[in-house]
Image 1: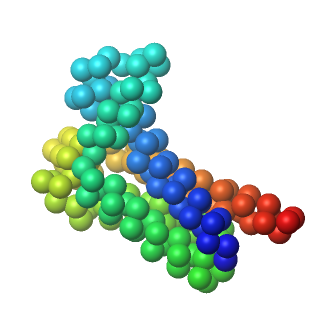
Image 2: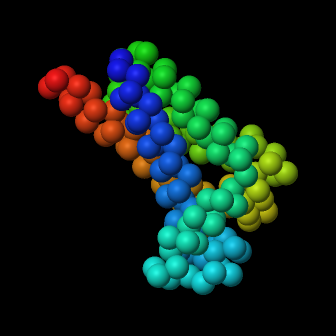
Length: 150
């Protein structure tokens, strides 16, 4: 396994699992800080950055750690396929929402809406997890193909 390919794919997936739901929450105006900035496409870059910044560091580290462990296992068993990676992304989001205390989850799940699995935010986080898994496989596969051509 080329370490460079794994590292780039993991960081890409980690960024997607943090910033995609943040952009969706900002666009929908669900986050109070994004709503204060104003909803709409012209405020989206700044408001999505603000929403992602509001998410506690413990949440970001926990998501990154779960993704790292899951993707390392995926690479280790040599089964880098989309369904398995999507499952890892979904497990990452669900485990983080279920296990992180509200005091550490600032701006995420229970700290944002008052409920761990709220009907409005859970699908948004799930989409982020799904896209993180897809991003990992696509990035890793592309890098491996480039490495094979060299």
